[in-house]
Length: 204
Image 1: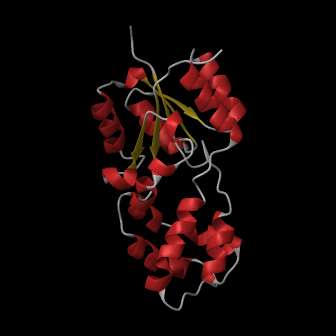
Image 2: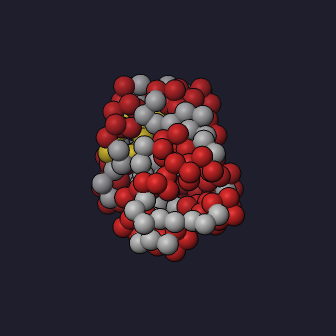
């Protein structure tokens, strides 16, 4: 029997940011819109590939309008915590999907671009029991859409692309998965995600 596994991105696909920009704006002395404007700049990719917390924030601060930190190294632990806490909780709809998959005994994984500090906190997620294994770019040293991260998952699971079903909210990540032969779907919302999984035979 062919193995079939489900793989989810985390940010937006399972978790929407909860108080992320508000928490960071308080620490940076600016407003949430300004934080969101600069937070996802070009330096985030290097952070997701294993860059240090300090290097990221040193590069990101000039991109955030109005941001000011008197002592970055002293403030850094709180910035890291705010970033981590903003993504820890998954939506009720996403939790329901993971619970259904677990009930059907479907091996379920998370493949996410995320810094090392976030990856290291995954053991404390209150939904950890719903996921067979996490794959985080910050620990792998390579981030989506680089083909290397998809290859790392294939090697770790000893599976080929036709055994992997993947959901991500970025078209370039979906395209990269398709290029390796994965079954991949562009996320829009929880209802659409569940409908795709039903259509693919994972859920009823």
